[in-house]
Amino acid sequence: MVAASRSNVLILALSQALMLSAIVLTTALAAILGSMLASDKGLATLPLAAMVIGTAIASLPAARLMRRHGRRPGFQVGALLGIGGSLVCAFALHQGSFSGFVIGHFLLGSYQGFANYYRFAAVEAAGPNHASRAISLVVAGGVVAAFLGPQLGQWGRDWVGGEVFVGSYLAQGALSLIALVLLSRLHLPIVKTVQVGIPRPLREILRPPAVRGAIFGAAIGYAVMVMVMTATPLAILGCGLPQSDVTPVIQWHVVGMFAPSFFTGALIRRYGAPRIMQTGFVLLLGQVVLVLSGVEFMHFLSALVLLGVGWNFAFIGGTTLLTQACRPAEQLRVQAANEFTIFGLVALATLSAGWLYDRFGWVTLNLAVVPLLIAALIATTLIEQRLRRETLAA
Image 1 (cartoon, one colour):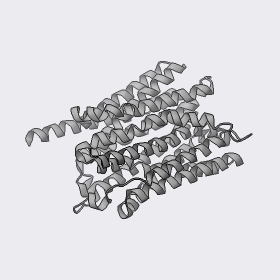
Image 2 (cartoon, helix red, strand yellow; image 1 turned 90 degrees about the vertical axis):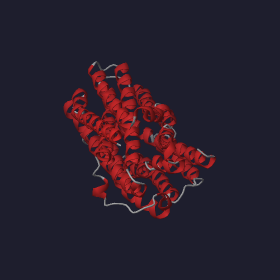
Image 3 (cartoon, one colour; image 1 turned 180 degrees about the horizontal axis):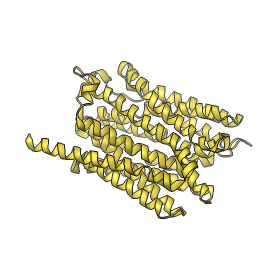
Image 4 (cartoon, helix red, strand yellow; image 1 turned 135 degrees about the vertical axis):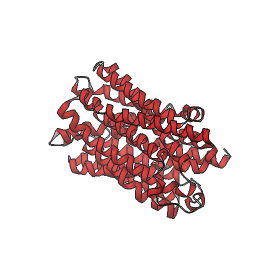
């Protein structure tokens, strides 16, 4: 990559780290705080569900805004939503308002809805020859988030006297402010100049099995990861382990999510995106086996690390396959459909996580994801075989 491309990819990776630090902080705290604020404990994960719904809903207007005005203004709007959401959450905690806490998380999810396009912007900055590497580097920004997010949550716990965790959400707002400043230095080509040509109707764009498989596989991998991760803090406390065990489990889960990104791109170039996605689904199934083996700290820790690595392979593999399967003029439309589908399913998974855990328990929640993972594994295997036949025919 040329120097300008490297600079843009670096800014996107740092912005990704700051955004994900805010999201990881929320992930570690929201279910526990939701359980404290909600009258019905089955609604404990509603704030996280609202965050994911915000991500899904924001993905469509974010794509339109960036197509009309460029990536940078869109990303800056997202950072402003992050600042606003953090302040609303802090005020809701101060007031003891569960509904306000949910609204704040919806705004935080909208921030993520805009920021999820960082990885696609990185492809535009780096060029198609460096696509998998650029995606991996941006997603790898989450390694910083693994440590910064939970630590800020703990450091900010008592910043505001008598207001537990209000300071944590104020710190989260500061991260979004830093991202806003950083994104002002981003210089990317206008989306219209990158996506030349006449796009086909969306139904026709989504017809190829590789496109549908990329979206389906990434959505299943993401939904399974979020469902299990969302319920984990509740399960740790429900199994009698101390609250202090939550932070390291979430931290190392996030490390598992993002640390493999340093080499996932190289693996995709060598073995192909479908094969890496298949590996991800096998790892996610392995996580279920670890859950069934016990409920001690090390069971949670090892299962959540494997959950993170499986997500990484499924998500980056799916993203790369999607960019390879679409024409340049169709990328933004497909990206919007991809993000909306993924986070619509993730929202359903997040909302059901609290209900499943509260009604049926930790083991049943994990067993419920097995059929989805098997379906995704079969789908990506068929896609790999189809692509191999097309390559041989060519």
